[in-house]
Length: 108
Image (tube, rainbow, N blue to C red; front, top):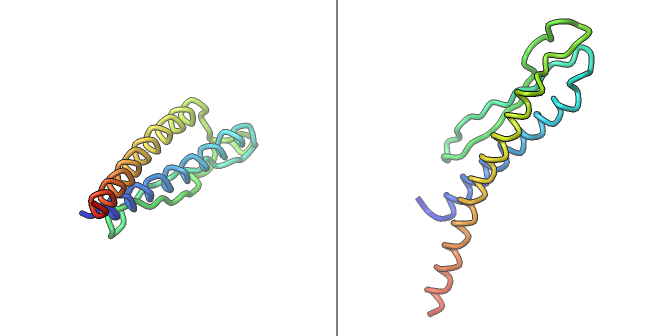
């Protein structure tokens, strides 16, 4: 696997986690909105080895005058997205560092 592939895969992971974070933020913002359907994010692998995300409503709220958002679950989702984003960012930075080392070797 090339350095460019590693960086592309980690970038796709960061983009997927950003989409999850956006859906979670929407859920928190609309937790008290009557009839709001919680958004869920599903991750899928791509042919290139990366990941893609899709967001969809989870279903009908239990009562029309309430939403189906659990704030504790949303906070856990925020923490998971943050940690996964940081892990992908670390992998991307490692790839960038390797590029720098290779450029130095080629110049010498």
